[in-house]
Amino acid sequence: MLGEELNGAVVPPRFRPLPNSPVFVLDSGQTEAVLKLNGDIDLGLAIGHEDLTVSIPSDRKSVLPRHLGILGTTGGGKSTTVSGLINNFQRAGMATVLIDTEGEYTQINGPTEDSTMISALERRGLSPAGVQNTRLYHLVGRETTNPQHPNRLEFCLQFSSLSPYVVMELLDLPDAQEQRYMKAYDLTKKLLGDLGISPANNEEKTAFIELDEMEQGYPRMTLLNLIDVVQACERIIGKAEDNISFYSTQFRSQSDKVLKIIKQVFDGKSDDIRSWRGLWGKLARIARLKIFDNVNVKPIDFQYLTTAGRVSIIDLSDTDSPIINNLVIAEILRGLRNQQDANYEQAEKAGTQPIQTMVIIEEAHEFLSAHRIQQMPVLFEQVATIAKRGRKRWLGLTFVTQLPQHLPDEVLGLVNNFILHKISDAGVINRLKRSIGGIDEGLWSRLPSLAPGQAIVSMTSMTRPLMVAIDPTPCKLRMVD
Image (cartoon, rainbow, N blue to C red; front, side, top):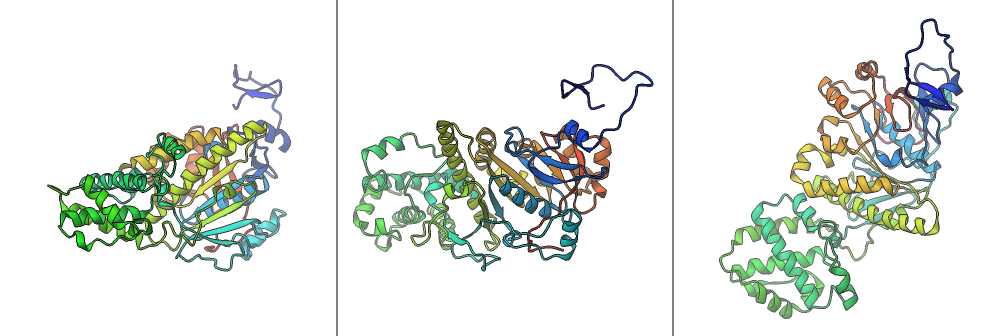
């Protein structure tokens, strides 16, 4: 019993039907209305019905901004679902940012060439087509899996954008190195201020008072600035001040003054040189990657990313480092949240609806596993803040993973919409039952035997979850079996 119809709306039933009550079969249109399957984003056909299309609305704040989880084992059809959604998000006028850790979606600007997918498209009356207006980003000095993309752009990270607490977590610094990191960080801030680099004037000085370093770093501070200070402290402790050679141009041009300021604050007495050397080594390793503060490469323009109809693909397939991937993801999420906040304020002043932005995180378990959350509580708190504030500002998150067992309850608790492809592990299914309400036991029992492309769909806009044959994707994927 779904309910009873009252003034065109389905409400909870007050009584059980009387014996021998008449039974009427609903047609497709009536079923669509009762189950609330209408919208401008088509997912596929409801299994068990002839022509019942399952769709969701993009213009309701209670649906996609309440975040989406796409879960399932390898080969279940997650990539088809994701690429199809990207295509539909664009048609709905949304901005889409896809964080692609394996380079699987870098060719979605072209039509599919897979014969099986083409046949499936024909059965649905669809034709192969690439996603238009895409831009492909890759880190400076790193390759992309689609170097022929017509709109490809290198980007660098700005060290000043990253919270010092997030950096310490991602570098997995022990307590002793964390203490010295913050000591060097504060000393670098003093140097930048005394040299007139940051803040550069009284107006900036006033603005910096409200700076929240749990959210972002210190403006204009570079990674080389910090390395210079760590190196100087290590040399002062080792009585090797004559061997100090600064890397950053700002400090190298005023080396005597910089060293004088450092020695006024830091004398190195009773300090452990091993911790400074260990910290220096870890910072130097990420500096050698040359992805921070590159003067020849611009950082990502987040205003461009949040423009209607834009599809931005962040290709991280050539990094080979979870630390770098997580640094990039943390920076993108922070930048998108700040930009969406600004977009929302502008839209409110203009009396218009802000552009909805959807961020899709592939292989989400590598970024937000239970183990990583224990190691990186500050980073997770930033993600949780984005998830909670994003709901009100039309900023949605989509978590895609083939290992849902690694997603902790804290992450699942942020998600209200689910597309579940085949999952065979009974333990994982039992855990998902506790996190996802409204799916009856009959659907759960079918989850381990779903065919590729089938999924159980639970959306806040739908009256009840349904099993759906997901539409084939019209665009090209690199890793099609």
